Length: 435
Image (cartoon, rainbow, N blue to C red; front, top):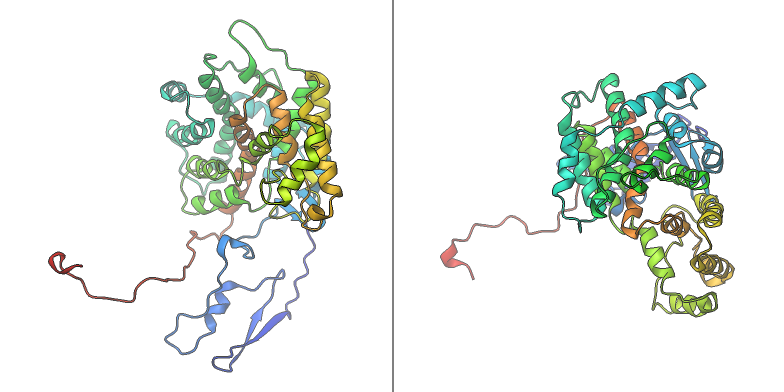
């Protein structure tokens, strides 16, 4: 956990130039309570001062102990553990336990957790019927969003969100069933028949098995591919108050069931500015025919003719620490599936862009999306599945934030303010008199 630098004597003094009055605003964790601004008024009839922050770029909406990011230094930690260690040393279910409970599981706790997940890895028949009526051309993320919301209708114990025991049950179900739903969508789109679950396999290996197995033929999962999928799920497991986590918290603050809340998170992730970025990277690499064409492509990016996808991040002003891990995974996967010229192009593009002052001065370094699409593509999946894989990994992060919020007595329903820019009050005009 980051160091607490709170000092009870810390305060911000502000003088309102409109009135000449001075105000003292307490400082805690380098923030001021936004509601304290309400005390700043021109007269007693005023509502009080508000802060204006489109996209919440500089607004803290909660306190959380789950994930820590220092974008300037390129640091990402889960409950204090660096992402490089969690992705290389842990399994996805270990990291799920860590994010949900605050500590790494003991051997006994992990065995119990795995048993709970395995027991819940069987979707209700109605969910398969739902997929059967989907148009096969429907985006797999749209299928997942719908299936997550529909899943809530299959259980009658989902609404007691203030009960820790009930929350635990829903968390187990969602971690267990999200990869099943993802596999259902994939198999439906590709006419592969119903999902066959094999709980004798690890979480990630079973996920690959559910998608890649064919009727009457077991698909053998190579250990390198299993490790790559497991690490990718870990790398995507949480990322502080991102767009989709914020959506889950905002929707969940109404005390709706978690299936509806995470469906909202999946809907947010569906957007190309959030979960769809790795698909855009793959499309960009397809525009570059060879390593020799990389310099010309970068020049076109500088000229504004094209966009350099997979570089830069809203949070990181340094190397995305996840990108360093994922580059090594890509090499291991291609050792198994065979060489892909696109990997050579990606490596050349990364080296050239990082060495170019134009991009480095703008803090444009590779992010997690730069290599992840290449890995998924090498495994044989089409680009529209990439965001689905992101959602499977991120599910535990959404649930950890939802669980933390539900256990916090200070939680209130989210209700931001606005600046009204419309008409002042005016009189109704009858239809015959309107111009």
